[in-house]
Length: 110
Image (spheres, rainbow, N blue to C red):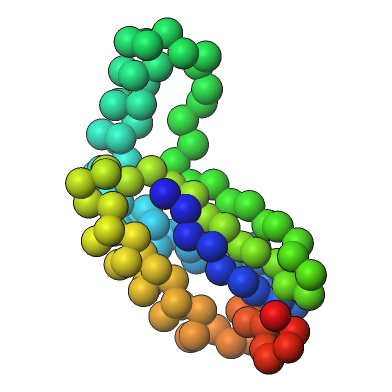
């Protein structure tokens, strides 16, 4: 699953990455290993090209006057809606607690 956020170039992206990764790992505590095992089993079973399992991945995509910050992580499909909502809420709360490190585009700058 992935969650995108539009942030400005002035954002401290190292800070954001570390905080977001911590939020995701805390929410998925104990579940990431199960998801990894399922992934590796599927790779063996279907003889697909063996790609490494990445539990939390970040992409920064320039988009005009802001950066699309995208975090990608595995989620059990049965829990996807609840987990993504909880993680999104946690991330937004963290963003709002750190206005000097996390900046959102304003007005026509979007």
